[in-house]
Length: 108
Image 1 (cartoon, rainbow, N blue to C red):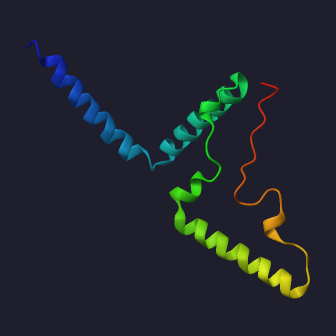
Image 2: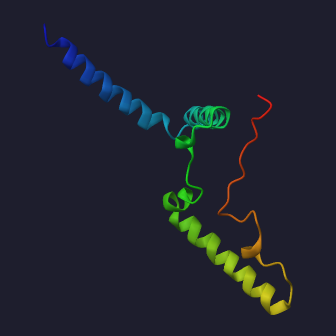
């Protein structure tokens, strides 16, 4: 009986991991993760904790096919703009797909 705490902690960790793996793709899981992300953003902005900052290009590592398709479409648009003489070059815009606009929590 003196080792019961080891077995219960291992079983609890496995059960918790299984629940997180199941909930991760459900609506409530996505909602929970987005709320957690909002809280971390608020803490980062409120207290200046830079170690919560995320790489703005990180989504490209997670979704390489989507990033490649977006890059291909941007290249096609730029090529069509160059051919037509239109100067709407996407790569020269400030808020291209690579940049993330920060949320403003200054009034909180």
